[in-house]
Length: 279
Image (cartoon, rainbow, N blue to C red; front, side, top):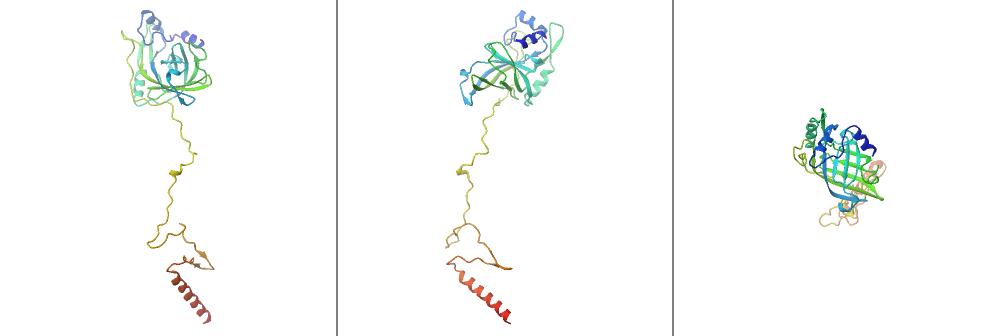
């Protein structure tokens, strides 16, 4: 592979003795690394194919590790069972309050190699990674459409890819994040800080343009009838009829007990006007 040849050319040894005991030959191979990368052990916990939930056992291949052994620590190799691919970081995410101090303190540590120089520790950084190049296995395992998400809490990874005309989204839980350097007889390094994991793939949002259900429409406010009187047919207030320079009261409803009083009042007003004009 072009990338693997390039990485080996600058002295970074990929995938040697990761997660297992260190033999003398492996220790010698590690002696001239450029940086001390981190390894994340993965367990697939959820999967979707074209938006529908599927069993993780039905995925086209199984991936079990992610390690930033490329691009001076800014690339991630996700692999398992001879399958895998390299991803380069496209966008950085702000680490969680628990992971931020761990990343900062770990990045300040150095490892002395047998070549006589020190290299820095490089923890995996949260962010969005895009496909860079295949690794091992078949060339078509993952392609340029694949993306990898490392959550801010570094407890979850999300891999999205297309294969055989289907779109897959796989969520992996990080069971242990460790550095396999200076093991001193241990099978692997100690696990990093653990916190409550958060999902990396958001649920499908509901459309804001969908009409409101009928049972959620605001209730209509009907007028309250006075005691002994029927409620008016409409909730609209009575209209005011415009005349020349004055407002006339709209006719009272038929059968109202105030109708006669209103008629008498109108007659008295008209009689007063006629007297003033004749006087």
